[in-house]
Image (tube, rainbow, N blue to C red; front, side):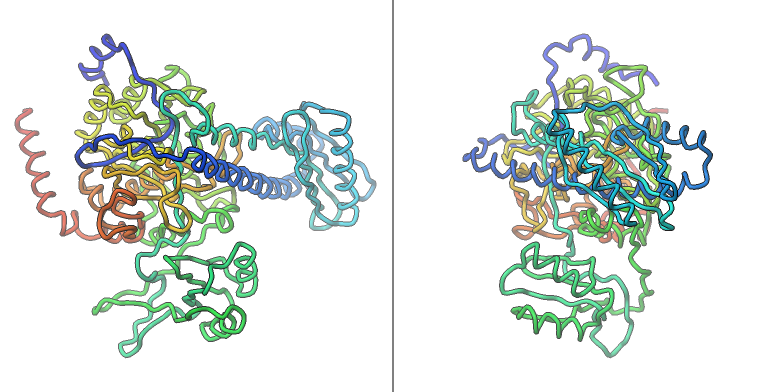
Length: 625
């Protein structure tokens, strides 16, 4: 498809193109005026430093969980292979998983073994001694039919760990050395992403976080339809502690009541037990924790007959239950009972590209486009775009890695930022237009700049006029200063909340902000078949883009403005009632939004606008003819 005429003259006159970097703000209202940056930079830097450390620790845990799964798979797959098949399989595995530096398969019967190594720096003599010690401990453990996992240790500039696992029958074992270079990558990425160091033209993607409990009033997951009873969940309890429990206390509670669900709303916690009913939960919390109050988790029902809702889907993805707090927090699981997406509704990721070979994105990615290097695949050499894409569309229920918000929507990768994580106004504008011309119904932009570039705005208008929902991140500077493209009226702006459902300390704010979404330590896909936890409004924005894709999958008759209005109205209201500059309209609620979209071709509250839009489209059609 040929380019619009304006892009040709814009290219010719393209002097002074502005560099854009990861993450910024978005909105559909009047463009706000800039304000001064926040004061107390030392305090803000310290807060970002803590968040960076948190992301590194979370990524360390993700790499270890992923490594353990791989060891089990290797033992199972190689059990009945010939020596030649094993060699071929291990080469292919290490070629696609560069962090698996050494793998040793052992036959416990005769103590024979076969080792498969990739080159790695040996490090100092002391570091080599630590490696040898860890390997010896691993061998002793598997000979006792025990698993082993070392702490992290350096070899040169990278960190490593050793992990070992015996087979179920005890006849074989595996010992592996894993590189944790991803930790260095995450640290450097977040130093830029959170703008802890100078970065090309106004910094990177914003940090957003949302508490795992995103319930507006009371969450209804299963229905009881008794006419003469006040219904409540039989295995749930609502608790208000006299003092909020710390991490150690929460671990103890989860263990005692056998729960994976501990949600918080305001000052109150909701616990769901796998083994205890309400009376048992009440006895437990009353005797051991002396809370301020306890009560059932009541159900509020409409005065009409309603069908029983199916159970909330819990994916089998390895990292979901323990690390993906963000999806239950915005009621994603519950929303899957209404729709899981549609392959014909495409969500474009205008970013650093995507790891097109990642196993957790296999089959979810379209061919895409590389604006930075036309003719080449839109490969991700930063990690940011792969992480964003995984939040939207990582494969669900494949027993691997993470779960994306959409089961079926396709992701269209458009690489507009280079290996430094930055790009020009022209590159971003061209990427937006290319996505608009190649089937995108939603475009996510976890990038931005504080300069209002008319060139970029024209590209935004081009996509908006083609009925595309444009989503962008607000930025990570804790400033009211509007960033673009997020602050353009045609764009839906997303800021971040933290796990307590407060505005994340680093998240930008202002009258242009539409909604909030989770953004702190979000687990997702990362290049070289790995996983990482990252923080920023860059992570919040794809949650909203995925929601827009689900809404358009469920109700394709909705226009882009109707989708945006629906997402604004279907939120958990935070901060001051209604819209405010710190929380926008509130935090997204996937279930509530999909429920609102599941009625007639256009929800009743949007009917006048819908009719008007249809009339305008008809008039445009005949005027063109």
